[in-house]
Length: 59
Image (cartoon, rainbow, N blue to C red; front, top):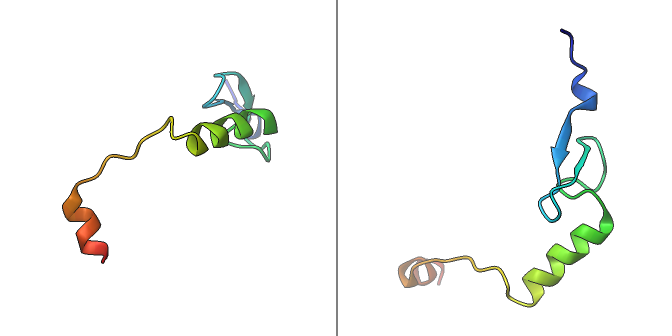
């Protein structure tokens, strides 16, 4: 079976919908999903956990 890599599908990280890997909105299926993700970051719904030592190394 021959598969065309240009037609490979990925799943949106926001809604889990399949989309073409060559879409410009990657890793999202649409601009709407990218805005939902951005809004989640801005509302601090996502966290990046780190140690205080990591913060002190940057200063």
